[in-house]
Image (cartoon, rainbow, N blue to C red; front, side, top):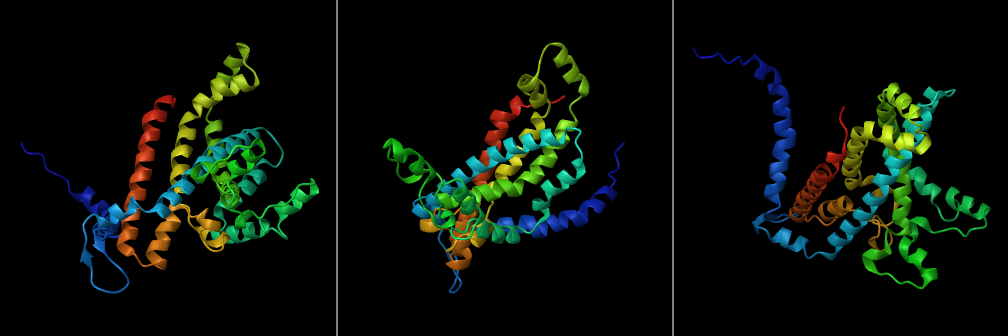
Length: 313
């Protein structure tokens, strides 16, 4: 006897599938197609095959933007997760006003990123900014921050007479300013997620560990971290993707956009520059496709090497 296929379930999901197909799948396929054309603001489309990709791999500015993005992700993601775990541990204690603290920490997440970028641009102002005022209180000279193209490692190694150049100078001071802002902005979300993970740790695990003599760091290392490892892995993957897609702070905070000598030109900003400033739309689509490949590959590497260390109850 043939089984009857009930199509009612497919009818229920059909509207969502149509929205995904029209507004997600079709633009992606169209972008891949357009990456094979010489597509500008004027003139006919010309099929050029893989020439946009060939140009991409010999473009020094693209490699510079990838290097800037590498340093940005390398600093923002681990530091955000580590600091968020510290504050989440404090908020997991029985303290007065715990709900108010949670709200305060989460406020930056729901605040407009444009407004936040404008405020932080003022904070990093070399003449009237709060950061330099704080440095002056401790007898330290202020920095140019968003106007300083010197690399962090270049500055730190200079007293040791060690010279570094190019990529190895590290993130510029201007990029460091963006990193500080990004950590502050992302902290609230990571704290809430980390706090949810901490509250799911069974109390009897702590009790058993204390009976065995575990205290302080050992308790955190051998009980808390394994139990919340799925939460940490989730934050690591999602925050890496978010960091790779950073655009607004670069555009709003640095003048000219891209920072001094292009040291804050992240890869998504370079995509924007090629598409909406230079109108190299075919080339921009090729960049977008390569960004997708990089993020997808990074996610798969994280799953391959880190997920096996995640403890699932």
